[in-house]
Each structure stands twice: as C-alpha cells, then as structure tokens.
Image (cartoon, rainbow, N blue to C red; front, side, top):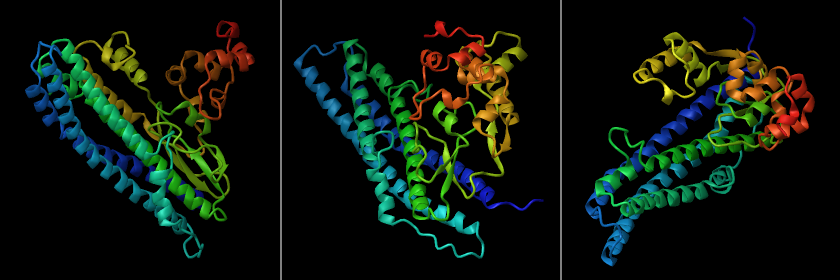
Length: 402
C-alpha cells in the first residue's frame, strides 16, 4: 500500500471534521428548537383563553385585551430567545477557540517527530470573531435580533388576521403554532425554526472558517495554500461549484460562508494538490422520482408532494435505498466540473436547468462561466450576450434569450 501523503492526511482530516461540524450545528439547532418549542404550549393556552372569536376588534375593550395578550406572548417568547442567545454565543465562542486548536493538532500530527513551531492565535481574538465578524452581512447579534423581531411580528400578525376574520381562539392558535397532526409544521412558528436552523449552520460554518483562517495566517510560512472543496451532490450552489477544486493563497480566496447553510471548506495543501478520496452523492430528488415512477408505471411528477395518493411511503423507502446505492467516494482531485461531466444529461439538467445543461454539454461552457466572482448567477440573457459562441455550439439561438 502506498504511503499516505501529508496532503492526503490533511484533506481527509478536514472532510471528516466538516462532517463533525455539521453534526455540531445540528445538535445546537435541536437544542434551540426545544427552547422555542417549550413556549408553544403556553402561547397556545394564552391565545385560546385570551380571545373570544367572532367579534374581531369591534370595541376599545377588545383592543386593550388584545394588547395585553400580545405583550404577554412577547414576554414569553423573549424569555426563550434569551436562552437561545445563551446557547448561540457560549457554544460558538467555544467553537472559535477549539477550531484553531483542532487545526494545530492535525498539522503537527502530520509531521511526526518534527518541531514545527506553530503559533496559535490569541484566544480573545478568536472569541471576538463571534461578536464582531459579519456573516452574510450581519453579525450573530444582528441575526439574532432580526430573527427575534420577525418571530414576534409574525405571531402578532397572525393573531390580528385571525381576529379580523372572526376566528376563534382555537383557530388562531393553530395559525400560530400549527396542529398536532402536522407537528407544528403548518404554523407560523415553523418559519422561525427554519430561520434559526439556517442561522446556526451558517454562523457555525463562518466562525469555523474564520478561526482556521486566523491560524493559517499565523502559520503561513508552513502552509501558504488552501484548497476550496465543495460537496459533490445536487444541493451544491452555483458559486461553490465554480470554486470547487481551486487552490488559493491563504486568505485570498472567497470568504466563507458564501451563502446560507454553507457546507464548503478550505483544506490546507503544501504543494497545490490533494490526494485521496472525497464523498459524492450521484442523485437528485427528481431523478429518484423518475426512477420510482418508471418502476411503478406512472408519469414522474416534479416534486414528492405531487406523487399519486398512497405512493409517498413507498417512494420514501425506495429513495432511501437508492440514495445509499448512489452515495460513494471519488478521487480528491475530482472537481465539481469533472464530477458533473460524468453524470447523465438528465442529472445535469436537474442541477443546471435544461438550457444551462445544453450549454454545459454541447456548448463547452464551464461552471465558472455561469456566475460572477462574487457569486451572482448570470441570467440566460446575460449568458447569451457574453457567450454567444457557446449557444451556437449547443444548437441554441442566442437571440431568443436576449
């Protein structure tokens, strides 16, 4: 067996650790959901006791009663949000310090018996990342303030809408927290859960990336380069597809996170290349739906929700089995461009869209041409203007898209 190289050790360690980070953010998300969910029984009870359905806001007394109710609900939710803040700020501050330490351990472990003289960034500076560094335009404090304000505003809006429409307290409570049958997914508070999850994953990814960057800059004489690695699956965004497999000088590549729910990662490289394997997932939901529909003998829908009545459970079982079969490993040098080139045309169309798919296959338009450097995806009209030759090679009339 060939001896494992320094780059391979680092690359494999970073991919393993990225999986760990996703689990870490998932665990934090679950704790935050539990804190918010714990208020919903109280919210439901207060709405049902505080609202007499059918009369809307027909009197001053009813308006005053509504204001009292809204103030009480706001107080309840803000208590939960204080606990959420405690989780966010305490655990992500710990992460900022731990990430630099993790980076140092895998670097030094890759040089057994060699005294590298690595330097750890100042602990206070690392913790400061959590409070001072904006992620997609806002600091964690600003994201937290925004999601709290939006959450309370949505609750208040749904109550007022229900009152105007003459709904009962029971009906309005369902508007706010959803139904038991849907596990609350049909209530307006479900939007808050999704937003909290997105903020958690995005800020965890951003803080981890900033902590590793601080370490890399402090030790740039040892590791001057880093490799941008996206995920080889159908959920990878156009901007991450563009940069996948590219090597940058430390801190000179695009700053992570590039978008919400970021999964890409930088791994350090000594000589500009990586050796080993990386995960790949060769499926899209539309592909799974096509395969299932063909097996069952009906026309494939675009979304799972549009499956014929009584087939969703069978599709879920089929999809789980096929996803396991279509998940594997690819050589680390495999870029998103190379990986996608090897996929069937229908798979490429699922990810890029049919016109961009044709440009990719027949027009020779590489993935980096679909977006600007800052991550803005070009429209078909812009592509037709910039890459007329590619449209012609693909057998498409560029004038039809301008």
